[in-house]
Amino acid sequence: MSEKTIERPGTGPQEGAEENRPPAECPAHAKGAPAKGEAQAAPASEAPAACPVDHGALAHEPSLKPVVAVTGASRGIGHAIVRKFYDENWEVYTLSRTPFSHVCPWAEGYVRHIEVNLSDDRSIQYAIDQLRERVGEKGLTALINNAGISPKNDEGGRLSAMGTPLKIWQDVHMVNFIAPALLVQGLKDALLRGNGSVVNITSIAGSRIHPFAGAAYATSKAALSALTRELAHELAASGIRVNAVAPGEILTSILSPGTDEVVEREVPMRRIGDPKEVAEVVHFLCSGASSYVIGAEINIDGGQHL
Ligand SMILES: NC(=O)c1ccc[n+]([C@@H]2O[C@H](COP(=O)([O-])OP(=O)(O)OC[C@H]3O[C@@H](n4cnc5c(N)ncnc54)[C@H](OP(=O)(O)O)[C@@H]3O)[C@@H](O)[C@H]2O)c1
Image 1 (cartoon, rainbow, N blue to C red):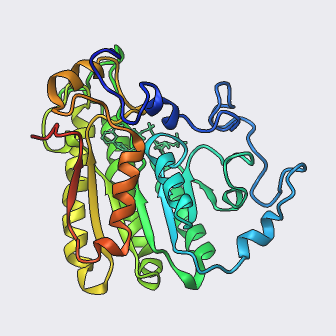
Image 2: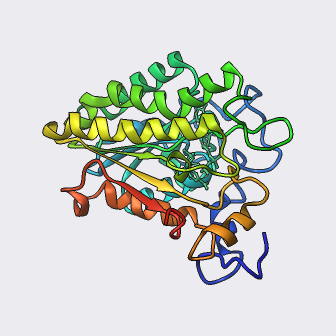
């Protein structure tokens, strides 16, 4: 990244990078954290010995807070969304493959994390069952379909439509498009009870050729945009609002080397986006301030779509 040419969001040149990084002391995010499938944090029923919080009690603590569930919450944009909603005093449920760490920013998060693999329909159903049970009668005020994958070819480059194997087509479409559809289907009752809204995280790559995002990714995001329109129309009368945001180049680990040049060439604001700038718009779309907004897809890209 050329610091000379690309201005970071915020006041200092490294601010975006710092904010994108989860808390340094959090082992689930730290370098050297156990790989998936290896021994991990204690199960949700066992609080860590040193922790003074009664996690079991917190799980059942009645609260009047609005409730949000965020997929892909372990890092990047999802992590920023979690922090924003937590700061706004929401009850936050997090979903990702990575287990929650007991030293992550808030103690009750420990019992509000659900490990899920969104490329597996049985795991998705398990997460739906867990969420429905945990939110109970209160229901869901918001569901954020944020998790996404963007696989590259063996050289780290763009996967073409001709060069994408079946398994990658299936995995990418499952995580990026079908999982959000199944989650909305499975959580519709909870969303109805919570007078809820849904925000899907699409991408600029869903509507134009992108130098790094491959064909499977682009088509999955185009499908997610169309799904947003379908669901918004279908659920409008029920009171569930469905919208999307389409980020451009946002500073997370999903970016490819060479993003600097794309930003210089294609982004009129000539800087990369901060995950917090996505989180702010997502929060707006889940708030009463956007009560008459449905089926919208808001570009968050410094003008890249222009
Ligand atoms: N960053 C950008 O410039 C940009 C631009 C346009 C759109 N987007 C979209 O924004 C969303 C967030 O992207 P990001 O940049 O924050 O990406 P990221 O840093 O790579 O984070 C992706 C998140 O998705 C989760 N995830 C991936 N595969 C999963 C699976 N099979 N099951 C459950 N969770 C899974 C990951 O958690 P685990 O690994 O713990 O499971 C992680 O929390 C994605 O939908 C992406 O397509 C990003």
